[in-house]
Length: 202
Image 1 (cartoon, rainbow, N blue to C red):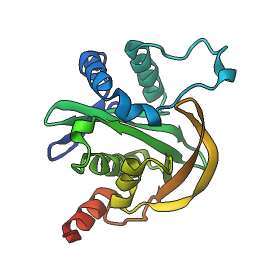
Image 2 (cartoon, rainbow, N blue to C red; image 1 turned 180 degrees about the vertical axis):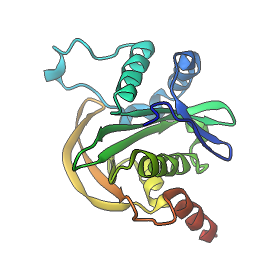
Image 3 (spheres, one colour; image 1 turned 120 degrees about the vertical axis):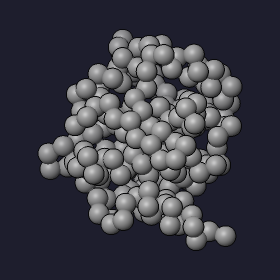
Image 4 (cartoon, helix red, strand yellow; image 1 turned 90 degrees about the horizontal axis):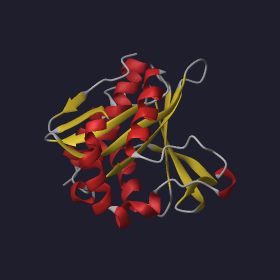
């Protein structure tokens, strides 16, 4: 597997996150602190003894690139017309008889509501099905996160079920709703499915 693919559709590009993204990444995160914090992963108290949790952007990027080289993750920066707009990570890539992964993402509020994230997720799904040969991709979303739920709804991902207290988010264990897409579920491709749905929307 190419561990550092760059894929594009129109103005949107997904490419490996880099150390030189640090300045733009920090600026976006500073501006979007209130927008992102309610949905941010956090460490439970029992994890306080863990010493290898990345605490800086540089450490995070090194960890992500190591996971990518091992074939366990695809840590993409989302660019719009060459400008950093967010982040999308395909994580937990598992092979063997499971061939599964999950997708997590965030976007600068300035770019929200413009169809960028649904396209980025669809592009990532297509890459994972066509190139990584995964069988199943899931996205887990807090039921209160209406903006993120709109992303999977626009693509048409199937709701699989509820996961009570699934992830530690913003200081506590939070319920999540799981949405899933399987290889071959959209024979035309996930991005093509999204574009077709968009073309039918008045």
